[in-house]
Length: 391
Image (cartoon, rainbow, N blue to C red; front, side, top):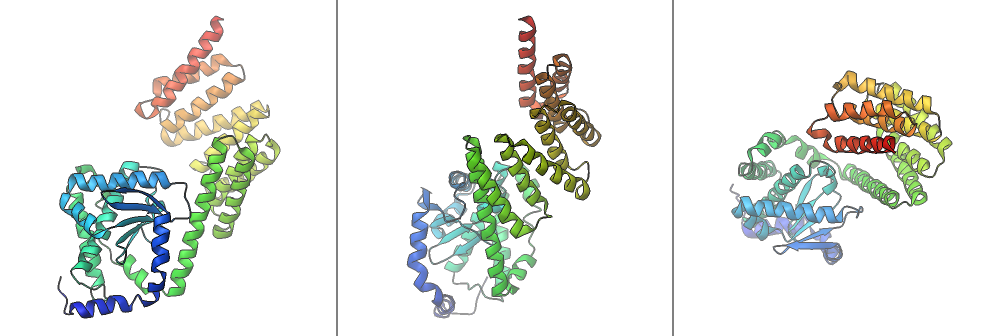
């Protein structure tokens, strides 16, 4: 890629677009240092995101991504080391961004769906780091990110991702090649956004981070048995989601259901039932009787009915969930067997052990590798029933 401008023109262009940014430089660097989590090969890894609940996971996965690059592509790893001093988790309007002044690779960690498919997301993080380091490499060649060149620059950065992917296990190429197909439209849409639109989008992204932070704290409080604090935090998260997404959004319903779960932990069953019944009605109407969210809510309502000794209603709801999952997935699908196991536990607690045994045996006989933990739990409960019978 060639340009017709001199180095002087290049730096004049670069700094003229960052004059207003200069007074903020000391504060930005201080913010990065305060959020530092660790280092790998001299690259500092830091988190300035509002949600600090995933700091350890961010450090671990970014370190794994850097090790993956180092192991499989030493040349591109050396490029990363040369052009990236910091890897920073921050709220963004994209998955990644490069900032030359501090040689920062910004990542929006939340955008990688980190709760699932960890190994795949480590590869995706590695690809983004290579993409942003390529921006640094192009800058070092005094190629300006101008309107006439920026699509070519982004295409080259994406090409570097594809070249790295070629060096990995074949399965990653099969899983991620479609995702890496170059489409300039998202970049063009971003460049054409007005400043006011970008500002509003960024505020929404920050609000989303705040919601995730509150929900993470609520789950942490629940895990240690602090159910009152957990309830307060789930209620706060619900208010934030409702304000941001509106009452009719399914994510807002799920937030409301988290409140119901916290109320159950506090044995406030009447309030919890009201929420479950209301959300279940909405889910049936708008998502359908067979939607997974509807079935999960129905099963949780069944658990509540058991707790308040409404056994017939509890059993009926569990059997409805089993029938729905059998019709959708088949009798031996892991989701179906999970519901069968739940009904078995319910019947065991109700003293109907002979019926429970049949259900646990069904789980053991029908379950495969995906249901290994479920099978082990079913075997344990069978042994418990047998030992109680022998006594």
